[in-house]
Image (cartoon, rainbow, N blue to C red; front, side):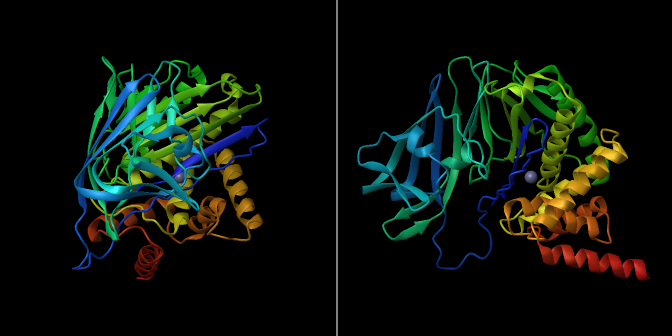
Length: 409
Ligand SMILES: [Zn+2]
């Protein structure tokens, strides 16, 4: 099963660096399959762009089902934007979870989904609107666990995407059976930039394009060498400018890695104005998200559902080394960033289990290990891929112990 990675969020107001990289891990189904566990239920899913601001998701199940458990509520997204079209099917919220239920077993289920501009910290942005009529649509929220009466089945999805007439449609490179990643629907064709494909909103300011282009090209070349791994596929990096609302002093940038690609969502009046601090923030976000692309660039293994500090703190540590090595950050800028994280972790009382602790205190751990972040992560990637196990603290500790023994000899 595919492991999904996080998404980051940077908020800036008046450069006072109210910044937060949001971390989230969606459930990755792993582990032992009991002899009695029923096999995944084959599901064909067709997502059709039916009008400028509407989609229809048509599920076709190999056997009748009575419910899809969609998992955590994504703020008011499904309540506001989803409308089941199949008679008898209803969207149900129970505590903080959502499902679609039907009294009669169904083999077909259709849901109409409308454009939705909101997002919640800690979750992927559901739908990002480009200024030119393009869209990034997060597919993961269409996935769920199936019920057949009291019997639970996992959903194994074969996905089809259909665009409007003449529209470019791009599926994630690794959508997997559990639908990670963003699909792009819109007028643009991707442009090759180094080892990635890029779609940039025509309204993206020049400074943002420059930072994206420079950081992506330099940092991905650097990661290729540092990790001694080429990307197994060409990721799509898409940048949506959803609006310039708010004053000139505010903007936020959210980046999400999923399905092997990165979707950035830029918003706010402050985007328009170039400033060195904004450039550094965006560069750090790009290098952080690229670090995740490499963390999951494995034939098997990768990011798991627990210990988010490992991949988030790890990405922060990797990112800082990369930015300094490529000359994008000076030694001083790197040190400032590191000190800020260490201070933040101190304020969080070294709590690795809270949202910002994943980043700040995770970074502190990697900062203190006897092996530097880049060789440590090269070993983590090798170990994860060789064993098929997800990144974990025991894996990390084993590598550190071997490294210490090696150094002692
Ligand atoms: Zn992250």
